[in-house]
Image 1 (cartoon, helix red, strand yellow):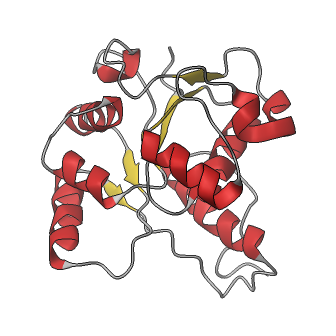
Image 2: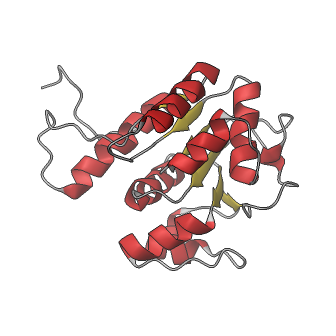
Length: 203
């Protein structure tokens, strides 16, 4: 445990490529990542990327393929979404922040209303109560009134709402560039250095 550790959770919203790219970038940056994902996130990974993950017998190689070799031993620490004994379920466990990417509207609702029904919800609640960085990355569109209200409640509680909205002033040459823009903005919020996007006013 260290104050530079980060928590990454993936939930059942479209946008699995964002979560996997973020995990890779955090590994390359040398951060220890406490990783958890919901069953719905596993379904999305299979549907969007043909990535099959066994939640009961998690293997980083199943998730990242050859890129799993980038991680040092113990750098990615997997926690089952039902495991309330995990360190990240307690405020006494120090971290530098948490990201839910992608973040489903059901997860937003649970966080906004303090419903700690699984480890993802509980860890997010911990980050809010401890006044630590919590970043929610929704991709849903359009947004209804209930969803907007839940996002507002989460923001008022201290969360950063960072929609998965790629920019076009960077002149993306493909999908990878669009993904990197969003992941780069997440890293900005976490204080993780990167070279993934061209910033406004540069060049």
